[in-house]
Amino acid sequence: MYARRLSIYSVKFACVALLLVAQAWPQEKISKSDRDLAQDMLQVVQKDVRQHYYDPKLHGLDWDARVAEEKQKIDKADSMSMALSKIAGLLDSLNDSHTFFLPPQRTNRYDYGWQYQMIGERCFVTRVRPKSDAEAKGVKPGDEILALDGYVPNRDNLWKMQYVYAVLRKQPMVQLELQDPAGQQRQVDVAARIRQHKTVVNLNEGDDRDVFWQRHEQLLRARYADFGDQLIVVKLPEFGSSVAEVQTVVKKVRKYPAMIVDLRGNPGGSVESLKSLVGGVFDKEVKIADRVGRKESKPEIAKPSHNPFSGKLVVLVDARSASAAEIFARIVQLEKRGMVIGDHTSGSVMESEDYYETMGTTAGILTRGSMSVLGAPIFYGASITEWNLVMADGKSLEHTGVIPDEIALPSAKDLASGNDPVMARAAELLGVKLSADQAGKLFPYEWAPE
Image: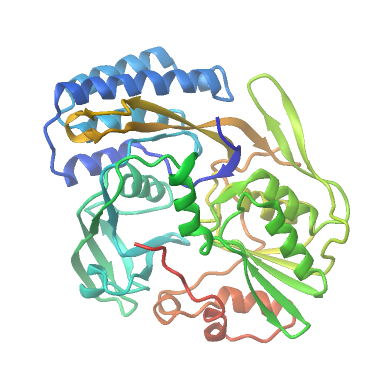
């Protein structure tokens, strides 16, 4: 059991994405040992869910029947990838944003070289990595994605598709149907950059954890931009595990009369960091939410810091703002502490823990077909929701999200030119003149290391 979190670091899987996988991927033949391994994983993961899931009735599902169904499908699967998809499908049947399968890592790392998200009801390319195949093929920010491997992305299926591509079934090639800001349509086949990396990575222990966090620490830091003594902008990529970092943010901003907190793209994170930020902008105790678990329900309370920020507050969110980021934005609305602008948020708000399991040996060679490892165990597991979170108005944000007080979206041309009209609008609301072009240059994007 590991540190509790409100986050969506990996998105879950659904049947519509399973169809995409079946048609888009070459099918490697599954060995008997791989099939047995998948069956073992199924049994371990389903028991963890039964033991730890916040709703002991599992939303009324006939869990035993569902497990038996997926067991039969694994017996008939013709590839290891499809076998693992059945385990993912079992957990997806709970329809819970924070409960999903964490499959074993492969020996290859895939970098697609482009990023995409929903903006309003349309899906756009938002960034393209320099020197990637995507850049070479002419994929550009501002291109609207009309179809991805033949499937039309929307708010219901995009995050499910992203789970497939990023976690469950990484693809060497994707086919995009694009429309540029001028309305011209084209079809592009884009190759991922595939690199060899360690087979076994346990992000909760030892050297693997240290290497991972050292690599990403710089990307996860809070970033600032100020405008004289009038306004400070704080960009929080996520709610990291360090409460001290949040306290540093509060100490830095408290002297300003106005602040913008940019939570766009923030997937959530540590509960304690969320409480610290809430306490840093309120001068009273504030209920984060009621935590509803298997055996009890109790409030999560944020206490005010010694000298909280008391100025005007605007919070920015988008379709990728999830979990703790959504809760913070909704608290600001419910307590009438400030204004939320941007896009409708993800609606992925639960509290979960990751349960990692191991399988294999620590010496010699363990051959599991495509899952072969040398002198090391196989790590796999599940993210499992342990608490439902009910806001002060008696409602959950799961599947509903936060509707901003003011909808503000970048256009395709804004994405193409790097403009940020949403930030510019927030500054305007706080009495600072800032062009969309200037706003777009405040926080240059930093790519994760390859």
